[in-house]
Amino acid sequence: MTNIHADGAPQYFDFDGALEKIGDLPALQDLLGMLQISLTRDIPKIDALLAQNDVYMANRMLHSLKGFIPIFCTEALCNEVAAVELLSRLAGADEVAVAYAELSPKLKQLQSEVAVHLG
Image 1: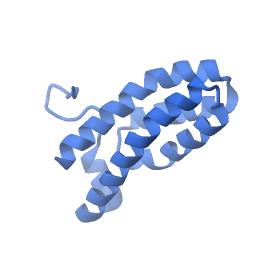
Image 2: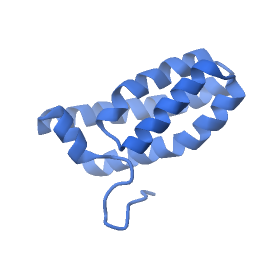
Image 3: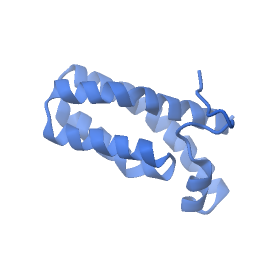
Image 4: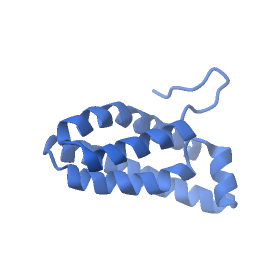
């Protein structure tokens, strides 16, 4: 289920900001497809890595997310991704898993919002 603001806008996906950053609608559409693929693949992988206490590999995946997700999402979600990525460099698997458990539904929501946009 997609959570949408009362005004009908997506909660995490920032289409206007993404278009401004990319500058070209066809290029943005291509990148959104890549984002969908990445989120579909990476969200469950990070869950699995943290379940195996592999914070190092989870950090690598979070670092990758932190690098490209600011193109597509709201500042608040970008900040949360950055915070969890930083935590994954400094803390143990249990602490990172708790933080990621709070972040993961938001990433899934972003994924859902992008899917709606892609139609």
